[in-house]
Length: 118
Image: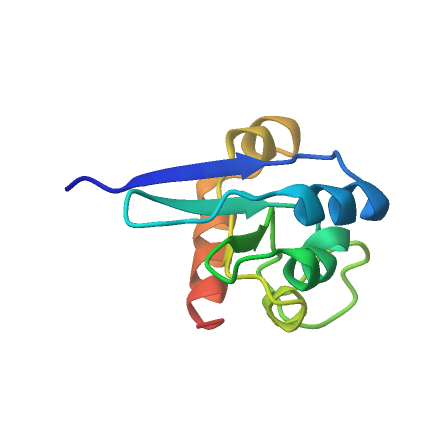
């Protein structure tokens, strides 16, 4: 039997209050037919994990930086998203490539950093 993936990327939407409301109301439970993955803004990862009704729902980050510590104002490290409970991260999204000019070299650095997160 084929298993489907239901995935959502909130982009730059949903503040903390909206996130809490969304996950309190969400009654979609992953099962043998599909998995549920939701990529939320960094500010919502911890709350989404705390508020979701079903552990099977995977919460992820929308981006990471390829260094784990340092003077990189505004960037988010893999250890930060892991400590918030992120199950996955989006790397190489087309918007990051187009709007922020992320190149293949940067995507590879992020990917290699993400591998160390496991």
